[in-house]
Every structure is written in C-alpha cells, then in structure tokens.
Amino acid sequence: MKKYQKLIVNLVILLLATVLIAGCGQSPTVTQSAVQSHVDQIKKNGKFVVATSAYRPFQFHDEKTNKLIGLNIDLAEAIAKKIGVPLEVIEIPYPSLIPALQNGQADIVIAALYITDQRKKVVDFTDPYMETGMILVVKDENNAIKSIDDIDGKVVGVKAGADSEKVAQDLKAKGHNFTIKSYNQTEDYLLDIENGRLDAVINDVLFQLSYNKDRPGLKVVGDPFTKVSVGMAVRKGDKELAEVSNTVIREMKQSGESEKLYQKWVTGK
Image (tube, rainbow, N blue to C red; front, side, top):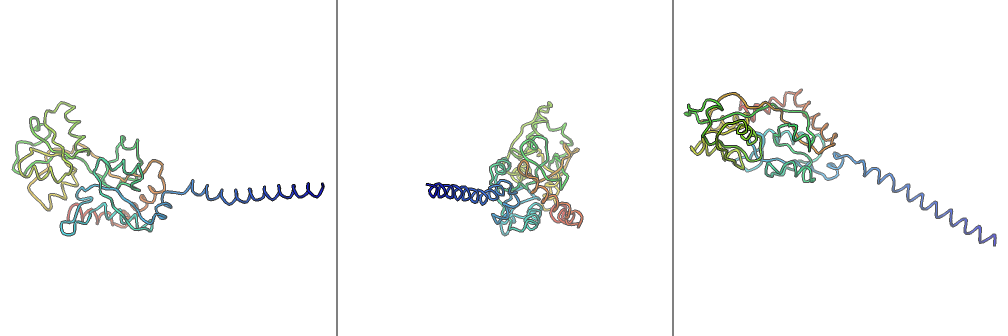
C-alpha cells in the first residue's frame, strides 16, 4: 500500500512540475507580446507603412514616372531608414487618412496634416516640422478681389474634407455669402480657377508657393486666415514611433537637411 501511495505522490509532483515548467515557458512570450512596441512590430513586419494623399509640394506624382515624390516622401524615407526597414507608401483619399491609421492599415500618416485640437482627440502628433496657413488665391488679372471681404457672391474652390473647406465653412458661418465648390484634389480647383470656372480658391500657402513656381498666373491676396503647425499623426499612445519620428525631425533640422528640403520642394531655390 505504501508503495502505491509513494507512486501516486511522485506522479502528482511530476504533474505539478510539468505544469509549472510549461507556465514558465509561456509567460515570457505572452508578456513580451503584450508589451511589444509598435516600432518592434514594424521591424517584424519588415516595412514602414505610411498613409498619404497627393498634395503638392508635400507628396505628388512625378509627371514622368508617376512615382510619388515630395517633401513628405523624403521625410518618410528618413524615418524608415532610422527604423531600419523599407518604406511602403499607400495613397488614399484625404478624409480616409486618419481612419486608415486607426484601423491598422498604416503605421503613420505623413500628409501635411495640420495639428488641431479636434484631431488630437483621435490621434497623437509628432513635433511640428513645418509652419503654414490658409490663404486666398485669385488670378493675376483679378483686381476685384483684394481680400476676403470681396468674395460675397463669388464661387470659391476648396478641397473636400481638408482644412481649406473648413476655413470656407467658418467664413460662411461668420456671415460671408459665397458659394463653396469642393474638389477631391487641390490641383483640380487650381485648374478650374486658371480656366475661369472659379473666382477664387482657398489653399495652403506652401502648396501655392510650390505651384506658382511652375505655373505662374495666380496670386495671393489679403492676409492668411490661419497660422498652423504641420505634424505627423500616430495612433493614440504610440509614444515610441512618435519619438523616433521626432528624433528624425530634430536631426534634420540640426543638419540643415530640413532647409534643403524646403528649398528643393517649396521655394525652388
């Protein structure tokens, strides 16, 4: 009888040891998976996925190769290099950029996003890497519109879902009486004002400076409506990717690379 009792005790000890060993083998894996950073996951995936939407001079298609180029593409390349993986850029409609980030379709949004309190509710931002603002643009020969006070009764082009549309809506809310015509792409409403189908457009000043250097014929009138900072959007709580991106921003500013990109893509100097 004692022989069987001893055998049973030994079996119980062996079973408990097996359970403990298995538990010890699994716990680090589960813990590591739970706390694995987004940057580690990007390295594991073997690519840095950036969501963007065509918007000159930040990101636009080369007329010869149709490849996406621009200031933000160069910036994205620098971050991908810092992480140590290839860059993959996905181009999607502007209003879908933040949803694409939230649902995991992209690691980051680099698309000349204005840093706003409204957007901060749903995403986190990197440090600003550029300052800009919205301005009113008309044809060179248009001397009737000299400021925002002259657009009542006019047709004004904006980009759908973008800050230009919000500025126009805010102006109407303040009592200005004009017609807003929204477009999917900024280039489309600039083409329409060039062809006389619009009286004015609201556009980003950096975009307009870049556009004017290649296609003169439009001018800025009045003062900027806004002065805002441009940043990159990451998912809420993604502090590590934000810091990696901030490191790249700081290094590019210190090395003078940021100024070179500005001259290359914006002013053309």
